[in-house]
Image: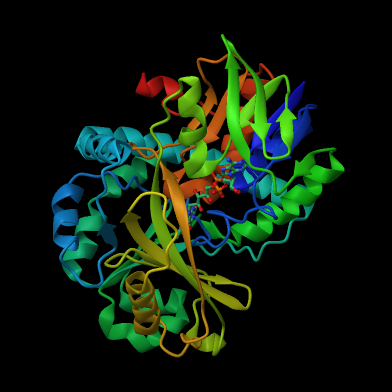
Length: 417
Ligand SMILES: Cc1cc2nc3c(=O)[nH]c(=O)nc-3n(C[C@H](O)[C@H](O)[C@H](O)COP(=O)(O)OP(=O)(O)OC[C@H]3O[C@@H](n4cnc5c(N)ncnc54)[C@H](O)[C@@H]3O)c2cc1C
């Protein structure tokens, strides 16, 4: 079957790989001049399958209110008149109950665990190199109260069989020696042993090379302008380089997916949640992180990627703008210098922003749509790198008419019907 994929981020490229491996003729279209040039370009690098939790959680509405008035807040809200933003926000708030949080977390972990196993298998089989590490994720807490509150999740960890170690500040330093200069700022830590990290863009670029050897064609610098529907089917897509048609179409355009599908009558509840990162060369290796560390208070992740350090954070609701604002940069830099002082030169950073394609309940949307030959793989929000391989493998099975190896309950568009 000929399949067109719209979007060459980590999700689109992983989809291309698994579809080509299943025997399909795949053509991928992206508007950028390179693969992984948008949200998959410089994310936090965590493959945090065991430590990740939905952002929509009990207590978040109240905590978020407090954040709005704090100078180094993880949340920035810039309301606009777009009804999609308000609709998404209401949906997000509805998911902040205990019951929905547990349900959404189970869905995330189910897919993320499967995805991690696919990533490990793929990385090994294809010899992909992307500055990866398997030292787990260390989440550090700045107050005993915050540490104690997080430890209440013990029931959840044992329910999912996660290997989570509770560390005091000395044990955190043993795990990440670069933290020794900030000993007095750490009340304790949680080590999610089975997590990993790596450079999402480097992975996507190497996977795209493997895709080419499987016959996948890439059409870059080509923007999809309109998806044309003819009753139950997509007939063609109009692009800046002319019309393209196929037997099946996969929408993997990240935050832009709902804008392309709304005109054909498909409502994807995906909204952009902007984030920022800085990347700097390692200065003093002894003071730098060795794996990946999350500062629980500021929700900033700091990841070692070879000879670079990547720090990422901030959730900004401000629509589709990519303006680089100074406030998030100051917050992220402050956390890096606070936890890993002297690790590198914070005046020499690459500053970046990207739009997380988020659903209101947080798990992504994968698989069929009401239009027969149209499929989606989007809405991965904060966990697109973590979930890419599993989502793509599942999608390829669905398109091939095979039952996916992972239970898809709660991961498809039906749940929003
Ligand atoms: C600051 C930050 C930190 C993050 N940290 C992590 C992390 O540590 N771990 C993790 O798992 N996830 C993380 N994420 C989330 C992760 O980066 C995303 O979920 C993931 O990159 C989404 O991939 P995607 O392929 O869906 O979207 P994208 O990478 O945005 O790809 C979509 C593609 O579609 C193309 N496109 C859009 N419109 C059109 C059009 N009309 N025509 C043609 N092409 C089009 C774009 O050019 C783009 O290449 C983070 C995100 C941010 C912003």
